[in-house]
Image 1: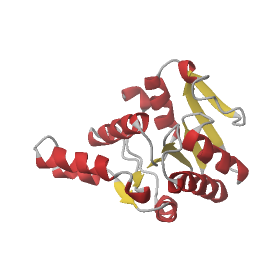
Image 2 (image 1 turned 30 degrees about the vertical axis):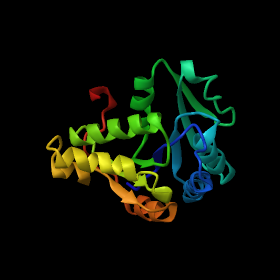
Image 3 (image 1 turned 180 degrees about the vertical axis):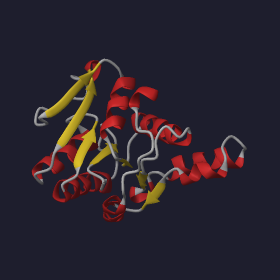
Amino acid sequence: MSVVAVAVFCGSRFGGRPAFQEAARDLGQQLGEAGMRLVYGGGDVGLMGAVADATLAAGGAVSGVIPSFLEAREVMHQGVSDLTVTDSMHSRKQLMFARADAFVVLPGGLGTFDETMEILTWRQLKLHDKPIFIVNVAGWADPMLGMLRAAVENGFAEASALDLFAVVPDVATTMVHLKAVVRSPVVDDASRL
C-alpha cells in the first residue's frame, strides 16, 4: 500500500527565515495535491498552521491531534474537520503515530525535537518501521544531525542509528520519496508504545 497519511512535525512559530514558511506551505500543497492525508499537531499557528492551511487549500484531508491544555495556547485549528483532543502530549504522539504511514520533520523547536527523537527511538526499538524524513530547509537541522552523529561517535548509539531516518534537502525531494514508499507490515501497534 502506498503512503496515504503523513505525520508532519514542525514549529508552532514561523522561525526566522522565510524559507521555513515557504517549505511548510509547499509541503501542505503537495500533500493535498497528491491525495495524502496530513496528520499534524492540530494548531492554527506557525508552521503547523501553514502546512494545514495549504493542505486544505489544495483539497487535501487533514487530521489534527491536540492535547486539551494546548487548545487555546496553540489556537486550535477551526478549519480542520478531523480534530481530536487528547488528554496529554504522550497520547497526542501515540495517536499521530497510529494514524501515520510516514513522518516528515520540518523546522521547529523543542516540541519538534521531542517528537523527532521519540519517533526515532521507537524505530530503533523496532516498534515500527515507518520512514522518517528530516527536511533540512536552509540547514536548520544541521545542529540536530550533529548531535545524533556525536551520540554515535561517543559510543552512545550504534552507527545504524543514523540509518533510522533520511535527510532530504527540500520538499520536492521529500515528495519523491513519499510517493515511492510502500507501507511495511512491521508492527504498528500504538498500544506497545
